[in-house]
Image (cartoon, rainbow, N blue to C red; front, side, top):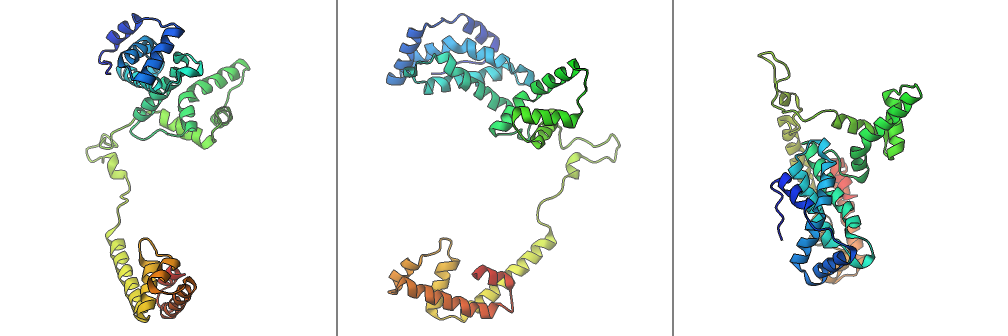
Length: 292
């Protein structure tokens, strides 16, 4: 089933003309969809409650998202509610659907508020949608008492009220204080001014660091090969299977393969490591640490 959300005004007018379902009809439609996947029943149920979805979408217009997009997200939340609704719980569909509609709209607003992700945890979401309201409430109360709250004091009060750390309040204030800017924008109006992207630190490995890392890796490999060459064939095989495989073998599996007890494999492994330590102690602490 597909719903057309292409024109929010047309959709709103259509929703206002939709039927009002009584509890018994709503129950029958929900059962028909749940038990028989009756798409006509689903369409009728969703159409009847699109006015609820549109009404909730309108409450989020202040976040700057297009109303048509908000209605689409509200409709998706409504359809999710219909999919998961259990008509035997004794709860009206509208009561159940409110949560899914609000969650769908909030997720959309937070995804599109900024190119930089605003937050995804439940506490961050609560802070995002309640920061301004709680802040305004405390400021009104302080004004009524003839007081003036300084920013640190206000952040502390918001932190306690919403139940999040003060640091989260500070970060959210910064994220809500302005919109995104292009990294290609000029830092000044001067002709020789540079773009903001030029001020970003280059996090890619530097040439010198790459050369040093390649040299150290080659040296460590040589030391390890030298130490391994001092082992017997069986010791070398056990060390390789126990330490150098992506998924190390167990003592038991090696014992079964070599016809030895698990304890004997452990002893051979310990003896091999002791030989390698003597070879490596004077050459490389990094490889020595790897073997411990």
